Length: 98
Image (cartoon, rainbow, N blue to C red):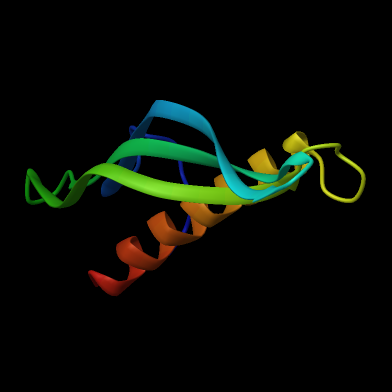
């Protein structure tokens, strides 16, 4: 497998982030301790040679947790974790379809 421009490619991964949520994940007497950021994307793997979609997911998810006070894990850290999880899932699904 080799990454090339769209016009030279035999297949294309297309994706759009459709939702980004923050939600309470852990609660204590003092309030929120930990939150979770969830990123949802619509993704498809399209075979240009065969002119067909090999796989499609309308709501693929990645997530990450962060501390409410940002002491150890910040919201930005959690967003990065969520996007990395999403990217790994896309790669895994794409490669497994071969």
